Length: 383
Length: 199
Ligand SMILES: Nc1ncnc2c1ncn2[C@@H]1O[C@H](COP(=O)(O)OP(=O)(O)OP(=O)(O)O)[C@@H](O)[C@H]1O
Ligand SMILES: [Mg+2]
Ligand SMILES: [Zn+2]
Image (cartoon, rainbow over all chains, first blue to last red; front, side, top):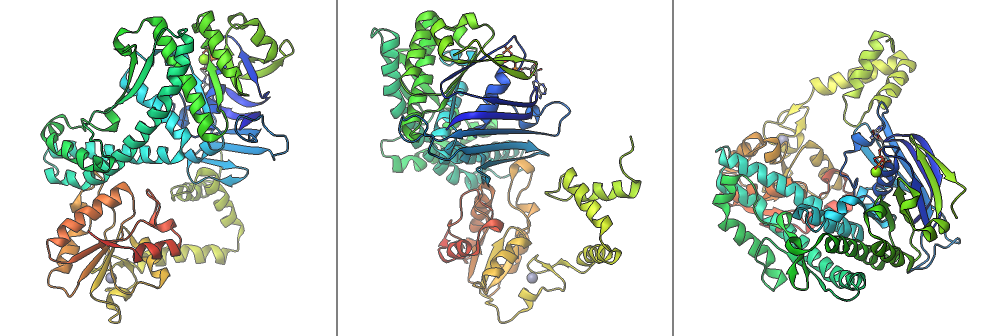
């Protein structure tokens, strides 16, 4: 869905705010600390995957207030790649949090789980931190993959949450075993279901990477003018046999072998929670060898391939949120990014401290909004 | 700061402690109770106290009851060869509503959860094992919720009970993973019961 109108109530530094967006590019300009990223954060929450900066719900409630509420009105896309259809009825998505409870409604219907929101709203955020995706921790790359797959399929998110729950229980038990508060073989009570769940997670991640890799390679090729090849593979911390049906058993066997060390270290040492995304440029490990510029291009290619992947799975491109990232890119990559985003009717929200950081042509075709102290005003200057 | 007359404040505070009741709802309920006829308020207060005072846990199955042993344990017409193990007393109600199960129950009062420090000793497992010893029970149905913890608990019980030479079955997951038995509709619940498997 593309957002036509966004309303925030007591969200971060916004007391009460409503803004009408255009289907194309929307630019939010303002000095530091005025609420630009807060606005993007609200939009990411509407896709059900939680805050892109990992904030807790209570932190996002305006100070001194008891709840926050985010309402978006928009229109679903008419079909693959098509512009939003004015004939389809408007959709209203509502998300609220207060008194330790969170609830979401789509057209008035209450959702059972937050991640069902991804069936209506999808977002891809690109912020300066993402530029360190290549050199960053494996956790950062896993998070990239998890967020993307969660939006592509709400079921993935459910499996992931389930796995993380098992992991917490298993690690708590390892600690108890180490302190002789539980028996060693009690670990088996958790392992079998966790191995099954982990195998499902792994299968989905491998399939996701297989779909993502060629898209990212294509995009990277055009970024590097065909000089370099980007290869992405899934790096499992466990040895996996070719036959997927054998994965749960293989995982169980591996865990059984490392049990002593796991008890000693009081944590689960292998599994999907320890995996990584392998990145190669012309066959060399990009995590160790890629230059600053190459790292940025890879990050960009990953993000843009994510946009393409979600668009092809959900039959509609996600809303793309570019948080202060334009000024971080050199003119060439900036052009590439905009060209790529112009290929489909994508709704884009860009934040920046200075309009000068953006290309003239972009400014002319965009709606421009000024952000100041949690208030937003449309600037007649824009297109 | 002055908000409410002191007794009203106490009522709101007490209501606020109930699960699922936030400060706003607590306030609404309190003001409602202050407006209804006195007799209605007394009936409610008495119902709460009576329910507390006149129920206890069945010494055999652990279910909530107004007499010991409970009506189910005392009913000789029920199938004495089957015991269905559930997490708590609400699950007994959910299964009884289906009218399709005629065996006995055992209420664990919780599930294994290392994170919360709940191990086998904190649950009514020892009571179950003792109850099965030398009993005519031929099948134990494990109907803990299909959550991570419910699964682990079922695995633990299966190990214990099979060692006693008794057949163990687990209700099938016609239920959504991560779901709560309490919220399942009765048909789903029944189908899950039908499709139970041996562990
Ligand atoms: N829960 C909250 N209640 C009220 N204000 C908050 C809350 N959380 C954050 N803020 C304030 O919101 C302000 C704006 O934050 P935001 O991250 O949106 O700034 P920004 O416009 O993106 O700035 P920058 O250009 O530096 O990235 C901060 O000054 C912060 O103090
Ligand atoms: Mg910011
Ligand atoms: Zn009883």
